[in-house]
Image (cartoon, rainbow, N blue to C red):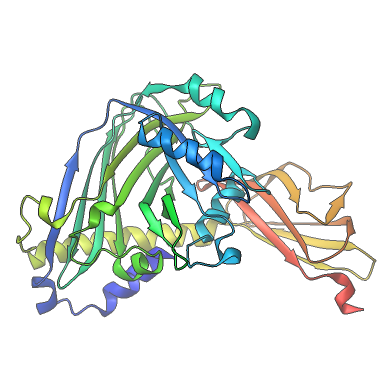
Length: 383
């Protein structure tokens, strides 16, 4: 959705005189860190205060990199975001909170301390250099982040680059302070995985999107209240396990730290750069639109029988089927490869009550791993 917003904003921006007023409020370039602690993702749940306090201390001491996902925020009130939190929890396969994932993968709640200790401080196996620019006129209107690295070996297809924007000390409308709150998460698989390939990526975020995520940068005077975490998660071609291959973390640069806070962007150069961004966005969205599968379904006339249809764009490999609480089934959707531009149909016999929801893991050719949702109303409501 971010890219569509960005594309729309570009179309309506007065790209004449207004462009010449855009200023780099702050910017910074970072060489790859040589090492990193374990990446710990904590998904908020009832009664997690003691665990959170421990993990926060470990983060402050440099023993871990803590990402705090505020799952359940919409139910508890306070105005904190939870859309990305719920999506990320689903990626990990979690259904109950509190929940923890370490180095990009789910972990055992009762033994996470020993796993963190075992990981310790690791060398970054992929060196990622990156930079950030906060750009605007009267306020920061664009956040521009670039990454560059060379693959030392061929990367697995599951390898993904994740961008997290976290707020160090978020405060909700009830006055509660949340440490290391994840405000925004952007995963990407759009890079070259070949050995020795040079990757140069760009991520541009508009003010409207930042505001929607609760990221208020103003004139960048207090931008260091937010941090950028860049994580390359996956493995090399012959590895038996996956992990964090590279982790980079820095505070956003402030207006006062900028080496040239009054520099004016050249309109022609900016227009060229934005045009390139538009081109890549359109191509990427077109590819995803054409390639992603659809999972459709409906209740049949038979009691508690669902007829499903899996319509493919690119070819897919069907993975795990997960039916959420309140329902169960002895049948499943067969794990198999479904050809591109085809339809797989079938029926599921289920038992339970209430609204029905299932999640189906699929691996899409050229697009990687996805979770497909099927949500149906309580069948008794139609009686």
